[in-house]
Length: 371
Image 1: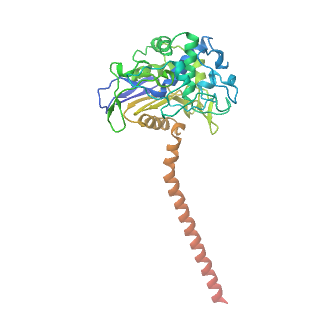
Image 2: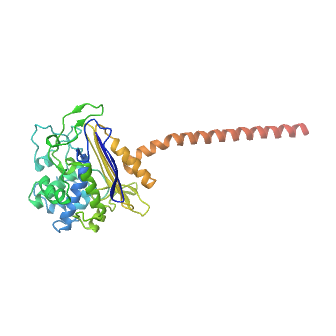
Image 3: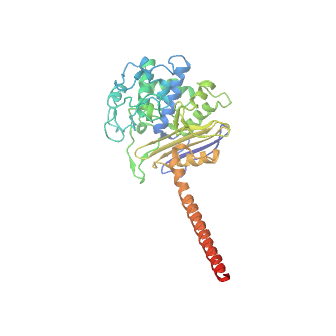
């Protein structure tokens, strides 16, 4: 199943829901997987805007459920800003595992103490490198942020997000509820096309949101502050703050406050958004070019990489640059021409060398005959 929406200058330009196995439309709910983190960050920024929390305060200032394990590094350096940007020093690398429909989801506190990893192995949410020293993706960091929201609001994360973010934005086809129990929801398929059961997730902030394509259009317009009386929850300055680089790879900005920074634009900004991937075969991608208000939304079940691949091509078309998320793909696509180029250079060098040797021998032979 697939939904694709193209936006131009902040408005829907084209959309398609084919080819899909099932009946899919603009209101069909898809699991977003890790794109959920963008929405969690947006909610946290509302608390920052309200003065409820400080981006640069130690997260422990606000936590009641969790105490990060004491280790080599200073936990007071784990700030909200660093958790949002995956620079807090957490090294869990989670990947949260699935729960079946008949399992009871653990509390946030229980998940923090014993998270279920998608790898099936044991995982600990702890500071494993100096906070602020480097970027390292951490699903566990967003479970900590989930606990933060619950502790400062006094409500379960999903309930607060519904009331404070989704409903005010008019995203009425978005929910943290079990997608298998919702109407007009995309079924779950593996990469071979076999239908499987839908799953639920304990880490709502990190991977638990489902949404329709047109709800994501609404969210994109909130990022662009499009005209037309649409609701805006964050000020332009706070929306802009989320797109400033904090996480870096090889010196290049790749992550803001909850958003991926795919590639720089001509104005010096970034194409921004978030991708998501989960089992058995879930993939989502949403990318926005702030220079022109263009955007793409791709939601897929039944393929692990299709949404990100389409998003990659769109980013390349918009900027002329490959995005960091598929840098390996860009390198791979350059290998064949690189090898061909090297072969051509080697052939030319060999040809020139052979020709030069022949000319040298001809000159020597001529001189010998003259003498």
